[in-house]
Every structure is written in structure tokens, then in C-alpha cells.
Length: 84
Image (cartoon, rainbow, N blue to C red):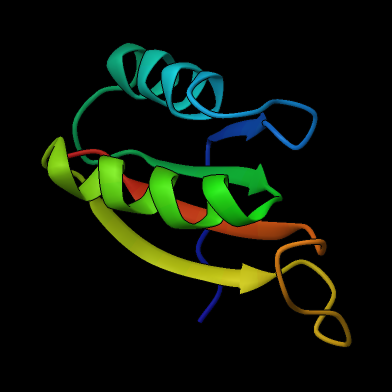
């Protein structure tokens, strides 16, 4: 099943805490029930952004490598979020 996201954010060039700050600002602009995808990279963002999204009451639908052949913190990942 493919989820179509209306909102997209690339935070790969950013470092914590700006990664979550930018994600939070995007989520605040979204209506409840909407889906967003966030392109994310780096050990801290991969751990902190999904955790912070959940802590703020939103649903993490998935976190997968952008390229299935690559994994680990140096690879870009796609975080899919539902604003609740």
C-alpha cells in the first residue's frame, strides 16, 4: 500500500535540534489527519525526530531507507507521519 503525502520536507542538510524544529513547524501548519513525508539522515535525527513526533502526539507510519540497498545513519531515510 502506497501512502500519498500532501506535505514534504527535506531535513538532510540540518542537524539536531533544527531537524525536529523544522518538522514540528510543518506539522503545526498541517490539518489533522494529513500525511507528511520527511527526508532524514544522520544518527541523531533518525533517533530523535521519530521519537519527538510521537511525543508530540502524532503517528509515525513508517521510517524506511530511501534506497533499499542502503541503510544506516549515513543513508537518507523517508519518515512518514500522520498529524493527529
